[in-house]
Length: 387
Image 1 (cartoon, rainbow, N blue to C red):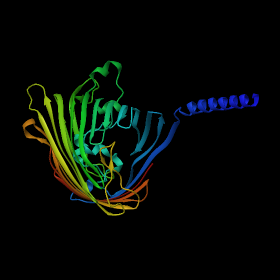
Image 2 (image 1 turned 180 degrees about the horizontal axis):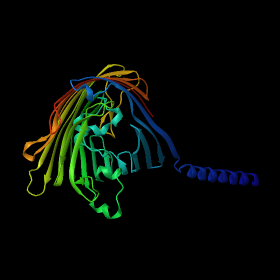
Image 3 (image 1 turned 180 degrees about the vertical axis):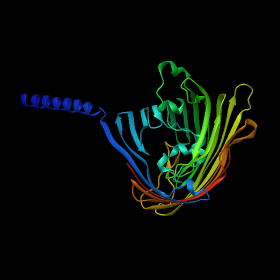
Image 4 (image 1 turned 90 degrees about the horizontal axis):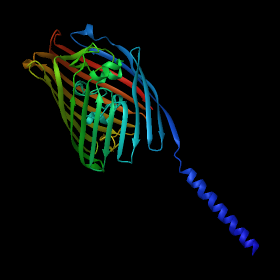
């Protein structure tokens, strides 16, 4: 009898200890992983303005950072080195309510259009379409809420102007800082079995940005280099002064079936101006056709990003792209230039971390104040490592 009671007591004690240990194991683990990237580029150019485009090699991007996770909390810090300059890239905190909802706070690229689905180094066109470089924005300090469900993805953001990440303002100047709001709404009825289809619309509003003097926030600047990182040459540049506000939108389209995909966006933006000056309108568009030559048989889909996933190792991809941009508006008296760009890129996904590229582009610009019409043929290669 005593033996049975003792045995029962031991079982009860062991059970309680096991339950206590199980409760302790529910405590989330702290995870930290290093991140980084190295891009090594080489380029040859053929142009009537050859003096502007020097052949050579460059390391256009090298980064080192960390990602952290503790339960539903995440954080990322990323520092980059490029062209003898060190700068802060991503720095944000994130809270994942569940698999479908999150909120992010810090400095990062807020979603606006299909190009938001890939980082700057993972664009299938090697360099992002110039239309996106002109009409989208770099990292901005702000907050973004994202909801990602089976057939719907939506984001809403509030943010400061891009220069807030690079310019230190005095406390009295914070209230003069430009700010904005943006949203991306995507409907994706098909995203399985190698067939993907989505349409979306993004819109944004912004107030004037810093124009040189920290006390003056009365203009918008839209500019881009030629789509190569070895020769840094300005292609388009429009400064719209006496600005009151900016409104812009971009519809997007993604279609893929098996080894073929089409991606496209149209960009429209208007800057309203003070003192009865005519508003400024800028426009652009790109169309990208992608094909898997060997390796993967189908394009996969990334739910959280709202775009095609990166092909797997051993896959060779060919990408053709056409881009048009205009930053010249005669009615507003602004001539920032016009551009046509046609390119072909071969991407070989060596493994999960390494990617080799060969790229050709023909770019022509004209109608920019103080700059002649310029044409360049670029032959580029890149080896990159991202982890």
